[in-house]
Length: 260
Image (cartoon, rainbow, N blue to C red):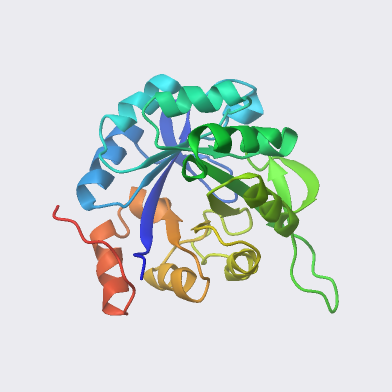
């Protein structure tokens, strides 16, 4: 059985790591370079770096900071934010990232996913999803809408239809960011992860809502996710990565253990 992954996330704004509730990003959560070093030492399986205002601001990602972070870690690094063109994907992969997370750009120009996957391999291309649950309709299954520009702009696109297209175009992994759950620490959107898992055959990284150890266990088992991404609980040291892995292992979940 493949090991489940635990992935801290750095949400970077103006050179600082920030956190908030439902994409508000209003609380300083530390220096991203220092945090990256700590997570590498603690045994994180991967690290995600998002420049969370780059797309909305219409600017390129802060590559100098990406390089500083990459120098601190010896684990896979995924980078996203401010990607608009194929050339941006190339630049990020050449700038020490192992994977590129494409969100708003894929919605506006889906061919960027095809071209990037064909050039660099699907294993390097992550489809990032910012999804907001739609109001419930009587007798219908839950549904979610895709948002772009860091959760600021509604698209009208159905999330389940979009994840199917992303995978067909070559995305080798999906990150499911629940806008409803983000920063709440009330638990992941299990229904979203389950619905996507039924649609696609690529690894799913659950994001948004981790607050307790039980939440991570739930999304990796009941939620059918391949990995759990979390931010606040690690940044503010509510839990350490070794503690999370210990908890999961005690309950029969296969995880990778590292000497720290």
